[in-house]
Image (cartoon, rainbow, N blue to C red; front, top):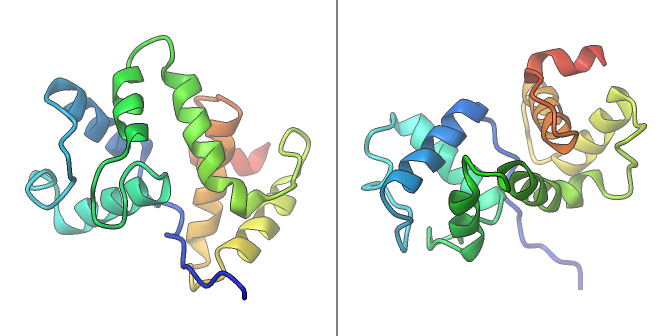
Length: 152
């Protein structure tokens, strides 16, 4: 029987928002659960986006319960293992979308095709390009802005 479990969609938030959230956790603590009380300083849409990103990356369970991956990422934030830790989580989360695509020499069009196939659950036309760019940027360990990656 085919797996009908619906995976969360790839996140659509800025790296600054994501890392800002991780920084707040590093300054305080990683709670047992990420819920509205933890996200109260963010607008409703930003809080929902952060929550969705945490689920997509496997940093929290569907219930909001934090996983050891979140604790590890927060611990690595700002240190020498940060980029490697982030890359591992990003690559793992996007693996079902990019599948066997060799990213080292894939064209932006090839990556876009994988995103269209992998996120066919009603993602807007603009969102996949941003997601592809953010993914490629993190995969390559680059600090390029997501909006410029289509020019690669």
